[in-house]
Length: 150
Image 1 (cartoon, rainbow, N blue to C red):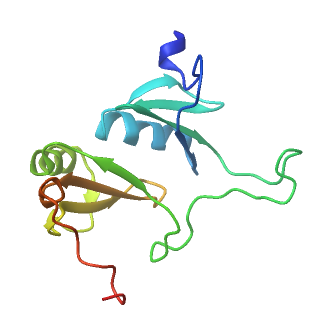
Image 2 (cartoon, rainbow, N blue to C red):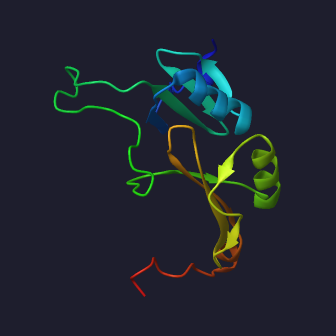
């Protein structure tokens, strides 16, 4: 294993995203086979290098000494999200076609939101993933305000 393949900066910091998953092999297959990530470590924890970032995945569980009042579990309500992955792409139509052909289940096709074209999909554990391509934003055009705020 090479240091540059791991989320281990020689200086400063880098951002990774941790996902609590129900089935590590299933999640690993989705992020590597469908989204094209590189498996750096199979398990304990599973580490996937995806573009210029890393995903770290492990099963849920109860409190540990460093998080004494926290229990981890995958999403339980697909209608509610408190955070989501946001993947920025250069060609959303191509991404939509390729990932759909590999089994990705998008909520809708890409939709033009003025500042960007975007769509959402879910991973096997139900995590929401936004896929977006900057369009109008590059010209100073902003998106509509969130629902209920405008």
